[in-house]
Length: 230
Length: 341
Image (cartoon, rainbow over all chains, first blue to last red; front, side, top):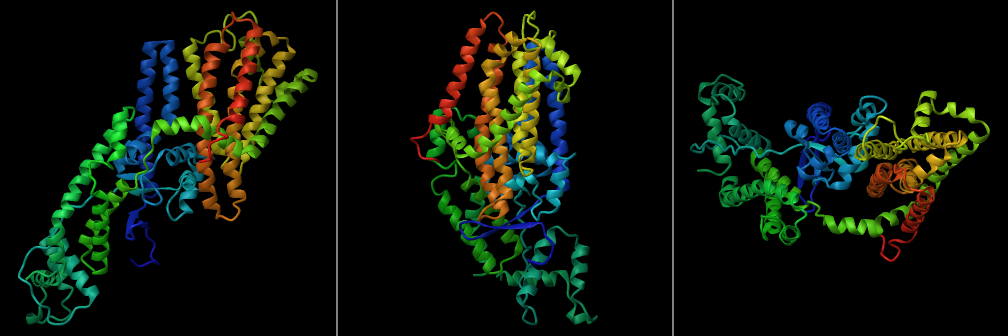
């Protein structure tokens, strides 16, 4: 990874000495997740209010207690018990983690959600937005204090393998970067159309010499050779 | 070792682990729901999860595979797959386990009072600001009663007057408002919310906490002073005496926790500002668990005890004083023997 490029990937070293890369979620997905949660909460408020209407005075007491918990603990409960995902975040495939990549516990989750009040100032998340824009991990003030980040959830990708072909030895030695590009090309063969694969292979034809023509199959053959198939 | 050989050798191990991780994800959330059951807690502690005893070993082996495939420049897809596996396993392996019941018990028998004593400077500052403005306003109004209009509107005053009118059958609330339970809900929603906001706004270099403390001191002092001046002492003071200890102390402690947040940014000492904030915030929110509980207890007392009218004032004052003494003793005495966590 070239370090001087702008990138939202955050690298964390685990105690086992390997690096893991987490993709930080930006303002847009987080705002949408917040909106989805707002809708859900709105619905639940409405339900509570209806229930309160049926139960009378006792109901309105219950409703106010419900409002209190919804306002302050709705995100906390989901973040602690649902792998850092409120329903809105789940919808958008993002999750809250400690900045070392471990799941959030009670204290960090409480903190970031109580401090939401400050992020909301002076109006509609003004400080929160400012903080997220000034910060390389898109953390709002609550995230900064609680030492948490919001990242995209990892989905294990379907295992794509390189289609089997008889190996071809390239006519000259390939350096490491070239080898990697060819393997990557072969791995993507199931995601791309045949025409596109052919088109990509054509890039390797600087001169139109028929006997040295590079084709899709030739490249796949080289890739097979590179990963050690016979 | 060529990539395909490597894959062939470990494919079974990886896919096995992949399946286990997926199933553990769903079962882990099930376990946490039945946390009250002691047996299930014990089970959770004795085995990491359904992943079995060899999980730590497997996890380390997996990490090793990831580094190997990176250093050998295996294909990005393989590296990506292993990395995703590592990320998932890492989250399960390093999940912080808490023993909820024990933690709560330790917190209320020592942790809470220790944290308040540790922050005595901020508690002191917060008390001076709140009680200073409160008593200042209370005393001033006895000589210049018109001053009350600088902090409270006439409309609100009229409402207060009717709430504490000695001819009321339920004091401390509007004539048309409902039952004790409804008021309990209202006090939780309103007062605890104010406390949490007082704490949060401390993040703005402590300014937010100063403002809320002074504002609350002035208005509460204003109401108390005005009602005393117009001669409603016989209803107002017995009403507030019961829950005053819990509620006022909780406001002061919210402010103190807020100051701790704000000051950690102003004067981080030898740490970086952000590190200082993170460390102080952990301690401050630890204190807020107890403060929120105090607000809820205060709401309970206010809704069910304070509103009773058929209890003589002497009893109410006595209970109020006992509450203050108990609370002060709680913060001064509890948890002195146990080492600070």
